[in-house]
Figure 1 (cartoon, rainbow, N blue to C red):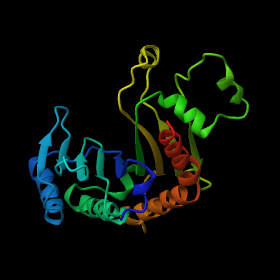
Figure 2: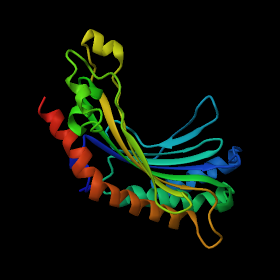
Figure 3: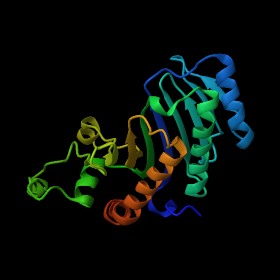
Figure 4: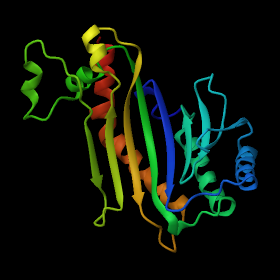
Amino acid sequence: MNRYSSLSDDFYVNMNLSTEMELPSNRDSILHFFESLQKKYPTMRNFYCREKGDFILEEDKEQGHYRWCTVESRRLCSGQVNPGHVDDALDQHRLVLELAPYMLSLSTIECEALDLLFGFDFTYRGNHNQLVAEALGLNPGFDRLLEVPHAAVVNYEPTVTLALDDECRMQCRLSVETRTNAFQIRTGEFPEEQLSVYVTARRYGGLAANTNYVETLDRLAKVCHDMVDNYVADHVLKPLARAISAR
């Protein structure tokens, strides 16, 4: 069982590698890369190309859990939604990063940024911003704003980014994304939408000569686990879940 499955309605683990140079887009390179990925994950059989030239290989989405991978002009992405275990998703990302240097001519010196994201979605019909403000609170200097008569919170998406080394190359960002707009608040008609919490670990810049992408991913995974286990689960995710269940 996924260690985080009880913390939200949906959980996903995404990897994004942004590059300084354009990735190959020729037929042979793209197909060889995706065919190699498909050998490990044969249920990834839906392949298509978007109008802007992005290539996608993914599993069927109907069951609510699936893998996907994209090759864009200057970005390589991999993700898994509702994985059985977090390590299943990380193993997929490791394979993508192992294949890319050989099949997409991707060098460690052209890395602009490598991201690992742990995403948590809550399904909620109502004012997301009001919910977040009440569940997580405001900065003490703003607390009394919630007491303004007849006021409704139109926008509240708290975010914080931490540098984890002296050069600010390793960073971690916690952010909340709401999907409620002023029209919905005005009409009182709220669709069932996803309220999202993102924990993103990012490593900026080219990698050292004695380091590779997989080793860097493993360090990012440790950062994400530490942040969720020691801070985010108890102080962000569980309060949001309790606030939603109480409504």
